[in-house]
Image 1 (spheres, helix red, strand yellow):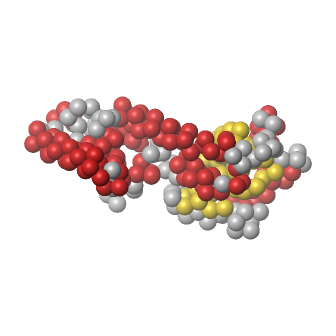
Image 2 (cartoon, rainbow, N blue to C red):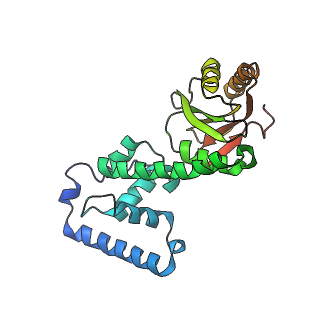
Image 3 (tube, one colour):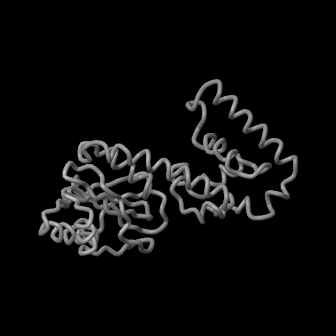
Amino acid sequence: MAEQADLFAPGLAEATSLSVIAPAADACAELRSRFAAHGLSALDEGDTLALILTRCLRPGANAVCAADALMGRFGGAARVFGAPEPELARVIGRDAARELTLLHGLLLRLLEHPLRQRTQLGSHEAVKTYLRARLGALPREVFHVLFLDKRHQLIADERLGVGTVDHAPVYPREVARRALELSASAVLLAHNHPSGDPAPSRADIEMTKLVVEALRVLGIAVPDHFIVAGDQVASLRTQGLM
């Protein structure tokens, strides 16, 4: 896919002609009318993103065009929310990117809430939904640990490794040290595959075994290791790999 031009680079939006702004304003008015009459089901994800952007972009900016540019660059709304703020800023400017990052942060808190309120392992799909929102859009591989209490409710979600597009360093001793500091009874491991392929590599499997062994000595369980690749989430436990 050809890379989208940066539509809202400094100075460009101000130079937009009224002939371009007016149709965009008409389009957003039509989207608002459709939403008011028929609800969210009448809008696709691009329409919804455009209406959100009308509240984020500076006056006169083309929200419909901005939504199209974001969808084209990141491949869908799910990957727009969660994309790194500097990457968003290249398309829609720093201030609007900050607003979308704030909305994404709120979404993560909403998705995290049930993980803190009920038995973690009883809600596999809630975990996967949270991890998709947390890791699915990141361009580099990162390693997260979800620390759980004795009732398997979430204590904390922390990033313990940041790497390249295909590798993130993991140190079992660091995982064990942090688990002890948080008085965790169990941990869930998670990392992303920016390539889009959720299949665990041999290195993923071996690393999981090392972490499991390091924590077993301390009496800390590792119920699962999730791999997030865009909209897909693979479970090593489900695949019989741990």
